[in-house]
Amino acid sequence: MAFNSAPEERSAWIMLVLAAVGYPVYLALLLGGLEGRPLTEAEFAWPMLWTIGGSILASFVLHALFRVFTDLDNNTRDERDRQISRWADHTGQAFVVAGALAGLVLAMLRLDVFWIANAIYLGFFLSAVLGSIAKIIAYRRGFSATW
Image 1 (cartoon, rainbow, N blue to C red):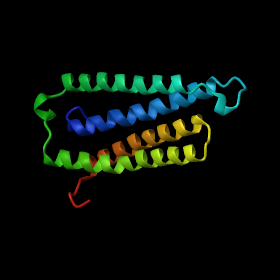
Image 2 (tube, rainbow, N blue to C red):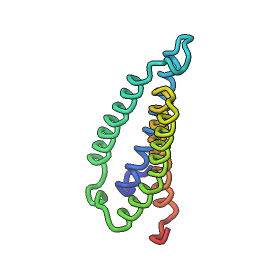
Image 3 (tube, rainbow, N blue to C red):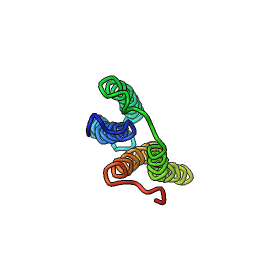
């Protein structure tokens, strides 16, 4: 990731790294707290809230640091940046929808709230990863508005 890259690309890298770190941390906290109990009895809410909150806080800090330490002339968005952002967001949102639908189906099947929450959280994680990768590829390999 270059410091002179577009702000949207830097943001995508931040999102990708935080997702790639945050979700495994959540899983480690979740599985580490089992102590021989079944998975559905694991305390998942607090580890999930802490990893989500930590990712949001880290995102604010990293975005602020990049904003301070990069060239301000390079921090403007043009039409291409907006098109790439829109396309990547639409690409990533497919997993938000899939996670929400999975949660809905699990609720209709009256499965444990553990599975519902984790299906939705997995959808958010996959959305962040896929959307970020799509954005990075569009910046690195080129983007056509016809995509």
